[in-house]
Structure formats: C-alpha cells, structure tokens
Length: 102
Image (cartoon, rainbow, N blue to C red; front, side):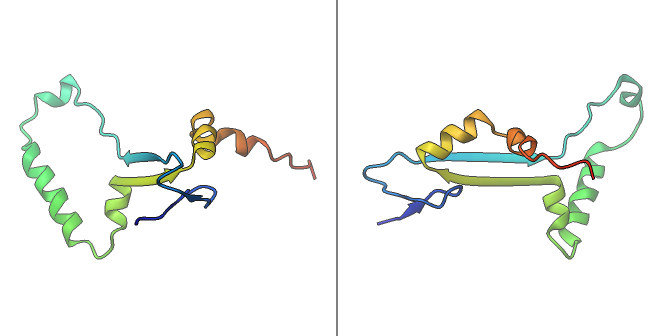
C-alpha cells in the first residue's frame, strides 16, 4: 500500500478515506516572439537550437537546465488545497510581516 503525506503541512493522507490533491507546476523561460524585422534574416533557427541543446548537454551541472525548465509535483490535503487555491503565489503571506522603521 502506498502512503501519502501532504507536501505542505506533512499530514498523513489516508488514500482510502481522504481526498488527495495533486498540484503540477511548470516553470520555463519565456521566448519572445519573432518580430517582423527578424523574420527577414537568413539565420538557421534549427541550427541555433541544436547548438543550444549541445551546450546544455555538455554543461557540467544541471543548473543550466533548471534555468530553462522545471517541473514540480506536490500532494496536498483538502485544507492545504483550499489555502493554495486562495493564494497560489503566496502573496498574502509576504504582506503579513510588519517590520519597524528603525
């Protein structure tokens, strides 16, 4: 039997009695669209992409890949799901701190 726990509050989630929610996130580098000025040039875009892929494969660390693309998956209990949906980017928690004006 597989045991799940909430990745937010770490509460154990009983797969037979509790609902478990899966959050999948992708973070990737945005590529600007090609403008009309750049469409007329004679660059070989496929060759440029191949060069980039080869440089990434030759890199010593995985950091280059993480800068371009990351995929994450989280299991949430029902309560943490509700909190996540109300504030998915955690903006409100950052505003809770009230620092003095030293």
